[in-house]
Length: 444
Ligand code: GDP
Image (tube, helix red, strand yellow):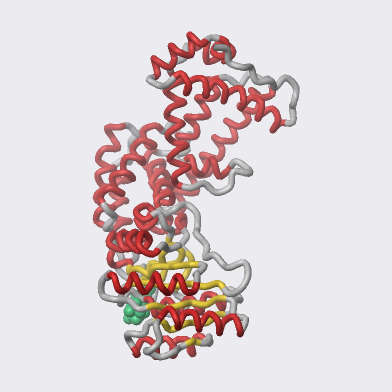
């Protein structure tokens, strides 16, 4: 079963928390060891595992208890959200050209399933209602050209071939011209794979890329190669610049390391995954579904989500009252900050704010960092200062003291104070209550 080993490795982590009341540094130590081991056994690289485990531990311990949610369930949810984040968060769709044919250039080492992907991709695109043409650019193996022609016939798409005497870049260009003449929507260009990366292969790919200016450059990697696949994606991206990866052979006894680490290691998304030898076994890569499959605990996940939803609702109502009375102070600010951390994933919360759109992993890390800064600064305030932010707006001396106590700069403190007032205004505006929303200037 796919990811079976990983799934059972993680299960032993939850089991160690049965009967606990809360999550603490002490009681998550052993479960975190299990999680670490399970990920390493799935062939995720050590630095990625380290970051993952650290992030999950921090969030787990910072979590307040959500009513009715048991610690093991909470940890399942935290690991799930972090897995989704690790795999890139959102599904990364194929990009289609605005005008003219979309050109997809496929690269990859020999035997990874590149030729199969060509056919699967054509089949997939046809299902999307797009006309498709394959271009046989692997001139070193006459058998590869034949194989592609046969597959094209099976799928019912034209295959452009020009034998083995023409340079791949030239074949690709001719193929693209032909596609334009025939008004084809998508051209998939197959290129030669080698047993290993070498300079000739990279040079050839660069040349093909220059010749056809592809919309997508996708590297096909084999899931069986685990973290090596992630390393390959990184290398190809640095060498030729790619737009994403296709991970094949995610069926069978794949350990899952490739699916888990490509995005984190290379910064490039997995766009599609192959999960079998049949034409229909190619599908978009959905990080949340994948995480769900790995954990195999759909019911727990949706239960914790509902509990969080209820809590958010209560918090939101409380907050709304505060805003209506223009009393939103640093205590509320801190509560909000912690609520966000408690929810395990800033990304989800940001995603919920209308108009924020998609967030990148870098933005999420940035947001998490600034949350920590805020917490430190607010914790250094006296209760009175928290309730009356005006006191801080008026007194540089107070801001200086807070800066010193929190180990942050005076500028950071001033920024946070200003931010609170801006937030009051913005929230009032959001509520459609415009009166009294002035931002006091900080006096120096
Ligand atoms: P290429 O050398 O990269 O063009 O590789 P091929 O497309 O010829 O595929 C190599 C082998 O892997 C073939 O036996 C394929 O049937 C098999 N293969 C390709 N994709 C998948 C997949 O997603 N799952 C499984 N189980 N086998 C696959």
